[in-house]
Length: 158
Image (tube, rainbow, N blue to C red; front, side, top):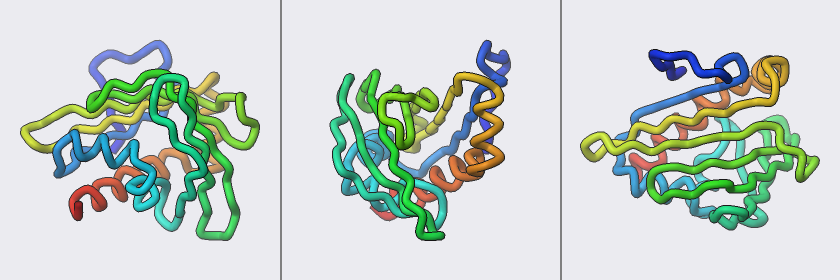
């Protein structure tokens, strides 16, 4: 589901926003997001698997990983954490092969809803064209929704 707010943001034309209410407490959902053993079980769109090479979840820490596509293609990725507020929020820069060159910045929020978790993932790209490119070429909007669906199914089993 694409999230919307009552007020458009200054970056709305450069954003991909996906959200989902997960049937699990936010502490558990947050842990599933920052523990490489958990992440390996759900990260990425349907059909993808993930291999983590390094995951240091703290401001300035880096997560280096490879997403393995169902077509056999490997996609090197890195994330550099800017903000970690457990169990409420993660803010990070996310890039591909060219480490150090951020493709976009993501903020993930985890809001308690009576034992469930309202999770929102907001990716902001440098330009509207960059956003449109990843939506068209990589299916980023559908991929984000599928990723949260996989996370929801995973935490429901935990």
